[in-house]
Image (cartoon, rainbow, N blue to C red; front, side):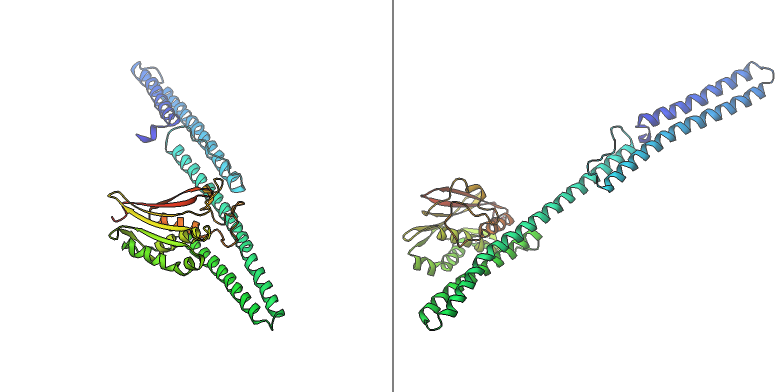
Length: 344
């Protein structure tokens, strides 16, 4: 019987049985021996047995009441803000199992409270980072507008600063759009429309996105891979993930450098490798490049906002993939995206 698992309850019932058995035996002795006034003695035995049973019950329920009172006090402390309290549940039985469940509930509530604090801190840092990132382009726009107002007769200068203003506005738009996309990933509201897509076609679209920029900067984007390789993915999101890596490569290469996009397929996985022969990433930064708003103290790049690669990582992980980076300073960088059983 599960009720007898607890030793205290077991001893309580054992004491009751012994008490009843003892007084029953005494009464039987009086009857067998035909003791004079046996009825009176038996009656007195019954009264003694009743008081003994009451005493045993009082002692047991007092002990149980003390346990519940202690548990209630521990719960009251938790409600008052002491998150470290726990109810003693080092014995067996349903009561202690209940206390164990209460302790688990306390741990879950503590974990959730801790996560809420972390979420608030993260949101605070995120807002601070966004404000900081917006200050630079907004300050530049104010300067450009002031210059254009002072140079109303110089059409060439006005056009020059109009172009610069458009670049800063594009920068703000990219920052806001990327932030909104990452927020959707965090909220779990992104629904991937995954279909079997041809990788060669997708990578060609990615190349076309940067054709004009590459030509203007004197760089090359080279595609390499089997035209029959397919991938189970959301085409729009996956191209955005690769776009961000290619853009990062173009940001860190100079005239005459090459960005290569290669894809491979085996029976176990699909790989997409984006490599360049640009400036490379400092060894101190490699492990942090996917962190939101991370900016290296070694980087001379003033255009990036530190969200593109973080968004890329979120997209790839949403497709059950992984992304790895290898870089050598002054030699180049290689991003490897791996999808296991990607077409199943």
